[in-house]
Image 1 (cartoon, rainbow, N blue to C red):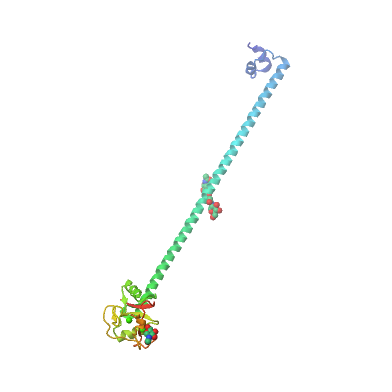
Image 2: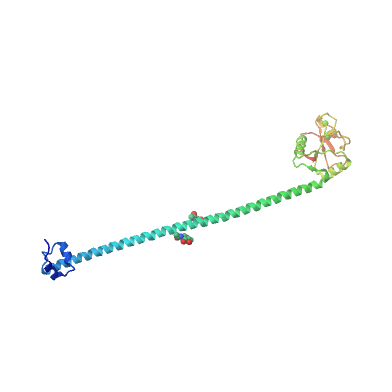
Length: 242
Ligand SMILES: *[C@@H]1O[C@H](CO)[C@@H](O)[C@H](O)[C@H]1NC(C)=O
Ligand SMILES: *[C@@H]1O[C@H](CO)[C@@H](O)[C@H](O)[C@H]1NC(C)=O
Ligand SMILES: *[C@@H]1O[C@H](CO)[C@@H](O)[C@H](O)[C@H]1NC(C)=O
Ligand SMILES: [Ca+2]
Ligand SMILES: [Ca+2]
């Protein structure tokens, strides 16, 4: 089955010898017919090579595209992360700003509170060293007394002419004072001591309707005659004293 080496060497040269051997067509290879066969074989190889190269090119291009799209994805991802980071930074800045606003508002609140305290103590100064103050809510006599007590005080006791003048000059409206005859009709008592001297309005106390046991000071009347007994449930401001 082996081809004749002499023939092959003469016609095709040593390079194609092995190809002819593998084809197994060497016995048919004679003259121009053999040349055609060789040419066809070479052309086939060329075509195969071409196909191989094209396939290789397609593969490489696809890989390059894949790499490119992968890079794009990474880039987009990176951009998203960067944008998130920017947003986070923005949020932190806004958070800081809000915190600062909050702090300055807290500061202002403290300032206003101390200003209110200052004004209150200035108002207290108006009332002199007696630590007296007017309630800022209108209440019945007993609720007014509770109001004073809740603030470490009690309804005011007026046991001197000087104090009567002082209070009468300071209040602008009718106010409860710490005097009543609620325990025993007709027997006026301060919240913690008996009454010695009264500065009654003319004709008072008159226990009108048998129902007037609590005493108010009416500053629109003469300074030494401005007390009246009134119904204890009537609501008005009061003078407290510590
Ligand atoms: C992501 O973006 C940052 C800033 O834009 C850049 O420094 C970094 O190299 C990028 N990383 C990638 C993997 O693209
Ligand atoms: C960042 O915030 C902007 C608006 O301030 C928004 O348009 C963008 O989508 C945000 N980025 C991300 C990744 O959420
Ligand atoms: C008694 O006092 C009340 C006020 O408490 C007054 O309105 C009334 O006129 C007085 N009555 C007399 C008879 O003075
Ligand atoms: Ca009475
Ligand atoms: Ca009366």
